[in-house]
Each structure stands twice: as C-alpha cells, then as structure tokens.
Image (cartoon, rainbow, N blue to C red; front, side, top):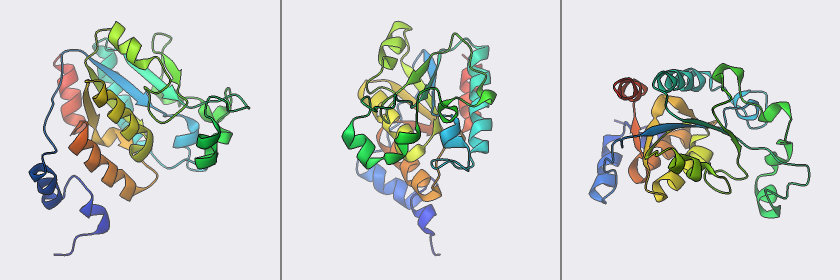
Length: 220
C-alpha cells in the first residue's frame, strides 16, 4: 500500500514509530504532580487566515479552550505568550529580523499581537511577550513555574513546527514533564505539523489525545 508524504511523517505511521523506538527514542515520561498550561501565540497574527503568518486553526482554538476550561476548574496555573516588539526590534536582533522578516509586523500594542478573545484570559494569568520561538528563551516563564511548584507543562497553541516545538524542547531541557494534546496544536503546513508532532513525541514530550489530557486534569 502506498503511504502518502504526510502520513510518512505522522504519529499514525507505525513503521516510523518503530524506527524511532529501535533507535532509543519515544520513551514515555508521563505526568508529574503539578501541571500548568502554556498557551503559545494564540493571537491574531497566527490565527487569522488573512494574516501573513495566519492560517485556519479554529479546531485548535476549540481544543485549547477545552483545555483551559478544565485547567481553570482545577485552579491550575495558566501562562499565555505572544511575540511583540518595539519599532527598533532590538529585542529580536538583526539575525532574527533578517531570517524571519515577518516579525517586523509584530509591533507592541498592535491588533495582530493581541490574544484571541475566546481564550478569556484573566488578570491572574500572565501574558508573556517572548522575543524568540521558545516561551522560555529571554523570559521569566521558568521562574514563574518554579515559584508555583510546577513540574509538568501542557503545551497548546501554534505553530507546531516552530514555537510549539521550541517551547517543548526548552521545557524538556529544564527537566519538566511535557504533555502535548495533539488536537490543541496546529501549523500553517499540514506536513510540517505532522513531522514536528512526531519529532516532539519522540524526543521531548508525550503527545496525547485531547480526551486523555482533559480526563487527567479532571481527575486531579
């Protein structure tokens, strides 16, 4: 049977999963005792299809809201991120602006860097303006998590191949348990999404179904 290019890089490809496992990847870390939710870049620039960076991620939005509803019902910490800069873009630096010139549209205070209203962020839920892809790089996210005794992060949002992957890697490198509900992350490229999700699951996080993640939160 012929395997499509997208399927060849997906979590549903048993042959590729076995290849990773035989190479010593894809172990299961599971949950720690105290989870928090990191909501990555669910702002207009990434979630409006007409935007340069945007795509249709309404299903991801619905899944993210479901995770937030469960987390808030249990009083779990929630941290949001966006990317925003002053007009000089000193926070980003010349290499970043040259490699990813789309950030020149990410002006602090503009509509495109504002969170989507469906997320219903409260004043007790920090909004971090991160200068680079990872929620941990150049921010105080790790310090906030440590301060609240968090040992597990549930990572949701966009984009799977960029800021989600980078955030998962940083969390893993800081010895945090990382959980990714697969329906609650998305990307403008289906192929990039599938490949990144497989890589995230193999190297740095446990990719789980939305149903299982919510069930675990509800049982805390």
